[in-house]
Length: 336
Image (cartoon, rainbow, N blue to C red; front, top):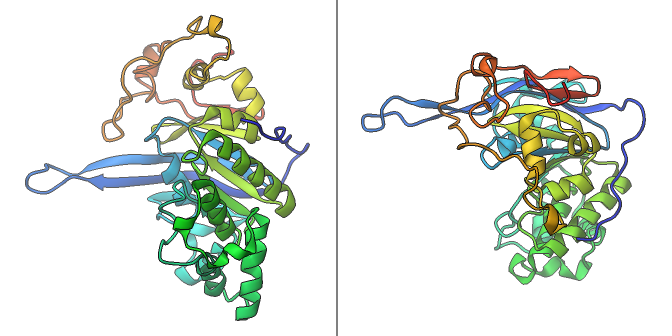
């Protein structure tokens, strides 16, 4: 996969675009006569993070750890159970429907499946015009011009405006999805597994497009993925999530070079190595099965799979503690 060089984060402090504090999203499942008492799924369970202007913050973790739910709750596509979400100092959880609607054009999402995220009965021009009309962009002529501009911005010809989604490839459909997200000039975009459904060569093209658009439009990305190779090339900082909680946060270089949490280390060790002679050497293995989010273990929720767990890990759940520019939730981080 050929990509442009990884972006380097700007030196010094940058404005915080979006932050969360103790954000939770719990779901009630089951209940009723035959299903027994209702149970709680702790999909997002006390997440606090800051995302800086014009950076790409990648969120990684196994399937089912709560990555997509966190992204949706941050945008209030799903309402949080508790906690705070702030966008440039404005508390989103306090806003009513009308006030939140006014901010939606600044907070957008690119969905995972380019086949399911576009209405098959609408032409491309209608798909791109819909968010423009909903926010009162301008006259019909202004909207047509903006739709043509958006297509060209993502590398497609304006002649495609009259086509339907089924007439495009997966990569082209995802470009249309990106164009729709950019229609109202947002500055914060959640990319929810936005290249995972694409072929590797097409992934590289879409990632390069996202990088170019970030530089051109000064965008901030919250990039949800399970593909660590993509993260290593594309992200500035990384958050590692396990069963609804962040267990480590740091720059991409730091996380890959020296992970502090055992779960981060095990994730990094699972990345395929190009040298077959190194395959399987000195690579610790993940133990057991991932616990159920409806029946979390006591203490550290990773201790049932951790090769370094001690007695305190089975009793006390470690908080996410800052270590300089990094943060880790572990009683015995790997550098000490």
